[in-house]
Amino acid sequence: MDPVNPLPAEFQASYDERDRYPQNLLQRSISTYPIALSRYLERLDKASDDLCERDVEKVDVCFRDLKTNDGAGEGLTWPSPECLSDGAYKLTKLADVSKRNIHSPTTLTQWLGVRQIGRGSSNQLLGVAKKDPKCRFIYIYGRNSRARLNITRSMLTEILTFHQVMPDILEFLLVYGLQSEPRDLSFSSFREQRCLKQSYGRSCISSLGRSGRQYQICYNLKGVTAKSKDPENPDFSIRPAAFYHKFDVVGGNALWIVVKGGLDVQERFKELTGNNARPEDKSFGDAIECFRSSLSAHLMFCRWSTEDWRAYIKWLEQVVDTEVSHISEAYDSKARKLMDTSQTKMALLAPTTGGYHYTIYTAADIQRFLIWQEKISESITVLESNIEVMKSLMRFYTKLDENQDFDLRSFCTDDIDEFCTQLYNMVNDFTLQISRAKALVKLTGDRGELIKQHRLERLNHNMEKEAILVRIVTIVTLIYLPATFVSTFFSTDIIKYQDSDSPKGTFSPIAMERWLQVTLPLTSLTLLVAYYGNKWADSKSRGRMLPTARVVSSRDQEESSSTGEFGHTGAGIGPTTPFMSTPARPTWVNRAWRPKSWRPRSIPLVPIKSTSFSPSQIV
Image (cartoon, rainbow, N blue to C red; front, side):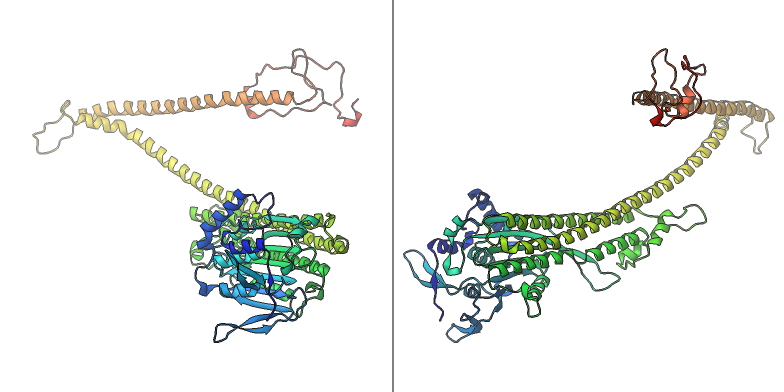
C-alpha cells in the first residue's frame, strides 16, 4: 500500500471546514476580505438547491489526470471500481493517463488521495497518498445549461477546498442551475490571481507537490450550437461555458475545472491530450512543457467559442427574410420554410397600388419581427463579451511575460507571442461577425419601419375614404334637414289646410305652395351658412399656421447670417457680393410673407462681374 504523507495542520483545518467554502480558504488577497467571503457563502447557500444535484444516484463528475504521482506515472495505485467483500477497494496500477467518472462522495475522497492516518485531540489527522498530477482536468456538467449540475454541494466544496480554488469561481458557477430561461446569459468576466513572488513559497504543501507560487485565472465564453441536424431548420442556441485554470510556476502542475451543459468540451480535451494529439499539447515533462500545454488548452477552449457563429448569423439573416415575407399559419406551425432575399425585397418594396399583389402585415407579424431583432442584438452582445474575454486573456499572459517573478518568461516568450497571435485572429473573426450582425440589425430596423409606414399609409387611405363618406352624408343631411323640419312643422296642429274628417285625401295647392316658399329659402340659407362657415374655419386654421412658419423662417435667416458668412444684416449694408457665400434660398413661406416693396438699400462700391472665384483667388 502506498505511504501516506501528512498534510499541514492549516490545510487539514481548511479541509475539515469544506462546507464553509470560501471562508475556509488559506490564501487571502485584498479582494477576499471577510465580508466578501460571507456574501459568497450566502449566495452559494441560497442557490445550492437549484445549482447542485440532491440525489446522489445522479452524480457524475469527470476526472482526467495526466502524469500522476508528480509526473512519474509509475508506482501509484488506485482503488478499482470493484469492491471486495469486506468493503475494501481492489488496488490497480495507474498509467500516464488516469480517468474516472466519480459517482459518490466516498469515491471522490478516495480519488483525491485523502486518507485518515490517526485521530488528534479534536479532529482527525489527515494525509494524502499521492501528489497532484501534472495536469488534472475536472469536468462538471449538467444535462443542459438550464439543468442542475451533476454534483452535490458537498462534493463541489470538497473539490474547491482541496485545490484551494479562488472564490471568484462562484461568480461563474452561479450562472448555472435549474431555470426555465437562460439566467444572466449576458454575464461575462475574467478574474485573475497571481502569487508569483518568492515569499509565497512559505505556503507550500510538499505532500501535494505544491510550491505556493502560482497563478489562477477564471473566465467564461459562449458558443453557439445547432439544436437539430435538419439543414432547413437548424434552430441554433447560445450556450455558456466557464473555465478555471491554476498553474504552479515551479512544479508545472496545472488544474482545469470546466463547467458546462453537455459533454462536448470534455470530448475536445480528450482529443487534445489523446493518443493522436500533437506531442507539444500533451507533454508534461517539466514546467516549460506544462506551460506550453496549458496555452494549447486555452486556444482549444477559445476556438470552441468561435465555431458556428458564421452559420448562426446566416441563419438569422434567412429567418429575418422569412419573417418579413412569411404567412402567419406557416409560422404558427413552425414550418419556417427559408426563402430567398428577393422575396423579402418584393414583399417590402413592391408597389402597393391596385393591380399588384402585396402582403398586408398585422401587429403580430411586427411583434415576431422585433423578437428576432432582439435575438440579433443578443448575439452582438455575446460576441462582444467573447472579444473582451479574449483580450483580457492576451493582456494577462503579456503581463505575465513581463513579470520578473515569472521564472519561465525567458523560455516561453515565443510561445506567448504565438498564443496572442492566435487569439488576435479569433478576435478579428469575431469583429467581422459583429459587423455583419450590426448590418442585419440596421436592415431589420429599416424594414420594420417600412412595414409600419405601409400600415400607416393604409390606415390614412381608409380614413380618407371614411372622411369622404362622412362629408357626403353631411351634405345630404344639410339638403334634407330644412325640408324635414318644415314637413314636421306643417304636420302639427299649428297650421291645417285639409279637413281631417274627409275619408279621401285631397290635394291642397296652397299647402304645397307654402311648403315650397318656406323650404327652398331655408335650404339655400342652410347651405350658404355651411359653406361660409367651412371657409371661415379653413382661413382660421391657416392663420394659426402661417405666423408660426414666419417665425421659424426668420429664425433660420438669423442663424444663417450668424454662421460666419460674408456680408451683414445691419442698416446701410447691402447684400452679399457674388463671390461671397450665397445664403439659403427662401422657402415658399418666406416668399409668401416677404414684402413686395423690398429692395436692396445699398450697392457694391465697385462693379463686379458675374464671375465666380475659387477660394484660393480671394485675398
